[in-house]
Length: 81
Ligand SMILES: Cc1cc2nc3c(=O)[nH]c(=O)nc-3n(C[C@H](O)[C@H](O)[C@H](O)COP(=O)(O)OP(=O)(O)OC[C@H]3O[C@@H](n4cnc5c(N)ncnc54)[C@H](O)[C@@H]3O)c2cc1C
Image (cartoon, rainbow, N blue to C red):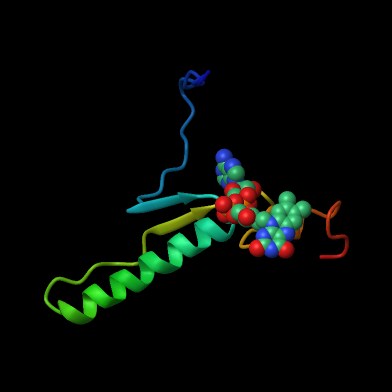
């Protein structure tokens, strides 16, 4: 079941423009970001007059350390990493 919080009135939340938001900085999320970047670079090389930007692609990671599998950063599984 999905529960959506009611927005609190009078509270301003920070906003950021984004073209792509990838949720999760595990191998799948990082591979997705890398591949998307490669495709944009290939597009820009082939179409110099219609460039795409890589600036607004974000990877959101809830864990303190991203860019790695959860098992690799979970101190209970891999102490010291
Ligand atoms: C104990 C263990 C050992 C393993 N050993 C190996 C191995 O030796 N070799 C191998 O190839 N594979 C191994 N694996 C499997 C490997 O870890 C997974 O296949 C791989 O991590 C899956 O990648 P993923 O990106 O799909 O998911 P995940 O690695 O789980 O990444 C998902 C990420 O999304 C984040 N996330 C989740 N929800 C949110 C949210 N709401 N907002 C923001 N971020 C969020 C999580 O914090 C996590 O970092 C192992 C797995 C385990 C459990």
